[in-house]
Length: 96
Image (cartoon, rainbow, N blue to C red; front, side, top):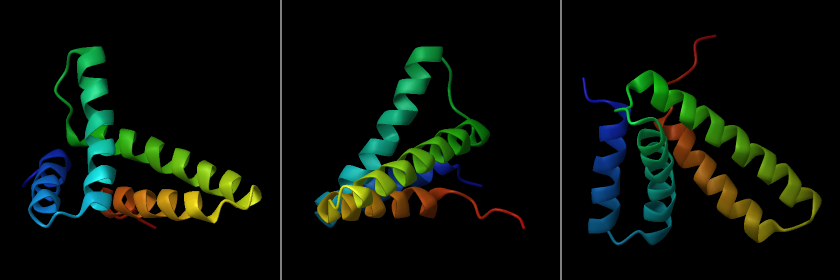
């Protein structure tokens, strides 16, 4: 079973090949968060740690979206929503 981190790396390569700059930017944002954690704690992330980081990023994006909506900044809402969608795509589905 391939890990979430390696799936994201594969998605980055695919986004580069297809020249999808928006998707590439969102995926690199995720990779940067992983790298930051690994460098700070001198560890190799496992899937559980990756999920924790993705959950935190998703929460931050949801907060940003509500703040941008309140400020009527639809341009920024769209960017945050797109990035949130990419994050949610890489999170495993939650059990009910």
